[in-house]
Image (cartoon, rainbow, N blue to C red):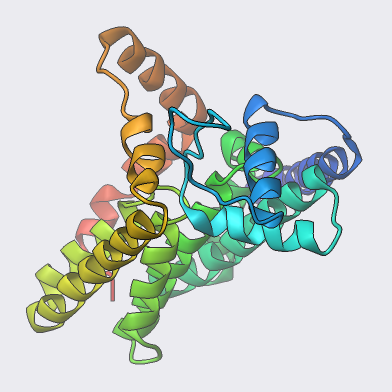
Amino acid sequence: MFRACWKFASILAAVGLVAMFAVAFWARNGLTPVEAIVGLHSHMFAQGEGLYHALNQYPFTVAAYGPIYYSLFALLDRFGVPIYLAARTISILSLLAALWFGWRILARLVPDGGAARATGLLLAAVTANLLYWGSVGQVDMLAVCFSLGAFSSYLDWRDGRGSIWLAGLCVVLAVFTKQTAIASGATIGLMLLWEDRRAAARWIPAVALAGVTIAATLQWATKGAYLDNAIFANLNPFEADKLVDQAKYFLLTTGGLLLTAACGVRYANRRTLR
């Protein structure tokens, strides 16, 4: 019965992915309000008009994210790819890459063979908000892709098959895609402190220094506009009602995954991640 349900869910996930990708390539108008804003900033950047502007001067707009997504978007724009198609292509490729990184991570952490790993990948593939962000022209999915790439690289390094600095590069790319993409870097840092403090003493300061140096360079190059756009304009006051709304959204979109993870806590505590 489990195999039958798994196959049925896999077919639904595949059909859903194809349908969402088809709509993303077919739609000629914005699927979200942010798509047009990000597209405008990227197009202006591609035309040599800069990216981060003083908030009280023309064009009186906020480029609210890091430069990585804008740069990739602008590159496709320069090659003549239509704006919405360029943005959604980045997100779709990022989603596929994120699922691949997820498979590699599960291959490192799950000892029970292909069926368990495939089930884990399926759970990710049917997560509604993951598919949503993977088919619209916004920065979120690219940041998730870099974050999972960072954790996958860390696991490779821990198994003696890769470089911890590749993980650091992916962390920096994730943060400079979307500023809130800090979960992977924080997780890697905490695990290094727990397992290898000598490596942590090198990796954490180096990644932090790289991030500060890039931010300072962007701040200097934009005459102080980078932090105003990417940080200060994004600060929102705390409101209990908004926190409740976010909690409800979180439970609706990830409640099943949370329950699945909770069922495995006792099992995970009996084994090391190795």
